[in-house]
Length: 289
Length: 226
Image (cartoon, rainbow over the protein chains, first blue to last red):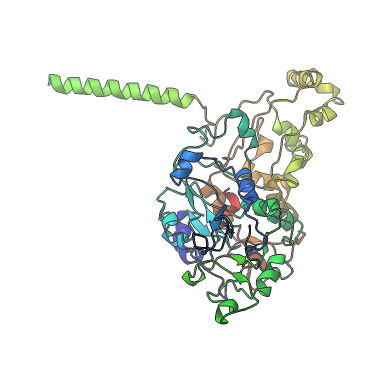
């Protein structure tokens, strides 16, 4: 993509949620996360570190907010924890929520990048191109989920995160990022690309279950499912449909009914209209611990 | 006057010093004549023209795919194993005593692979797939291998040691991806009924009379960047 192509076809690269003349076809990668199954074990996060060459920054940089976890487990505590609360221990009533880039269809980060380093791909991903990124960090400021991470240090060379003998464990399909670029969850795009190539050469589209993200693969309770939302046979498509969550709406069936409803599916910060690609299933049981 | 002379002498000296420095720093990686890439010296001067060249020019017309066999079924073309060279050459007595063949058999006897060097080395942040390009142009379009490989590798059958003859830059890749290529040509194989595009540009039957389906190459960043 040349700069002239970028400028001439700007509206196509600023493509938002699917509209009638440009439906997602043949792919729209999406996820659903069952919070009832999530036990907060952090295996997804560890798997992500291994798969995507993430640097382990250490306590000090963590305290400075410079941690690089593309997927993090957020903790929420029950409101009644406290001196008057009914709980014996404050740790009771914890709720966990794995949070990663939601691959928004109308992504707030994409519109503000001064150099077009973050774009929408035709299969519904929010791409991040390290070579084009100049490190303005505007995208991170505009991200409602705060899932973009900036390389404040040159981890591979100056910080010695991967000593010589450890460079062998780096994933060759993922760039080792240098200083001054933004990065974020890619839905394991290297796996998607490989699966698409295999499928394309065999003259078919990627089947459900053929490609897994690293977090999904590592999840011991199978809380994460990932797949092609366009494919009516995919698990993700079935889950989204069962929960009546629609990609291009900012109000779902669940919100319209007052009080109790059987539906559990929701997307985070939906009323801001980023049209995220990750659906969460509300917790049913009382407490995770 | 003196001051003017002094300055000009100083400037000349400075210019000379800078150009000497520049010339020296350039020499660290010697480039090919047309500056398309670093000059790569191979352990054995492999004559591509002898192997793949036209019969009229003393070539054997061996298909690229005979040695570079992985190109059509994987992302990387790989390096042909030494066994492949020996497989033919142990039966070719006429060149057995030639210096390059002697060297080849030295590697074979020592049970060591020939340390061939990479000529077409893409940066680490680029994802390129040989298989897709060969499927697209050889199988779907029914074009000859030498022509298709030549789009990126140049006219290798005229070379001795392969050298870079195309820019292999992003703009150069994109210049081809922006073109409308016919999806299936006469004699080609239709691969996949609907899954040949992943771009916003769907193939359109632009030419009403012949009804030839045309499509551009993928144009989203993550297709090639990783």
